[in-house]
Length: 224
Image (tube, rainbow, N blue to C red; front, side):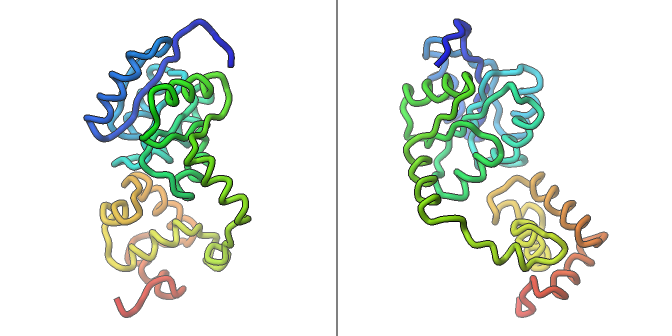
């Protein structure tokens, strides 16, 4: 690990005020760490990263508007000098893999202590990867199990992804964007992105056409 002598400049992102403020207080007590800003959701985090150019973002996953995975993707894509360490309650396969695919280089669960968080921030600032035990266990389990089968995505028409297919099916059931976001535990802006993508791929122009498309391709249950 390289000691640059400069403090690690951090932005804290969590939609729960008490958690966010607690993390800001905790990190402020750690030597060599400077909290430059905090955000309540992914959209605010993206804006603050552009403003402050931190070394590391300590990122929650499940948040309104823009979730942690989408925010991580935007930050690492547009600001490669900023690393992301996920700090979340969730350690399931999908959460870990989605975050890492989005560009996160660290993944901790919220039972991590101050030393673990400090180590992860320093390692990611220095360009390394830092995974907590829960994330390591999920990755090892996924590797032992082999690559997951993808028959659903292969069977979807017009190159739709599995998540786009899920969004389309929920549209066909009459759900609003906010309902879809809540059911899929993603931000509403992420839902809108999926809708724009699936509209472009399928050639539909509005939700009514999307519903007809879903029924025509067997992606909605007529009994609902």
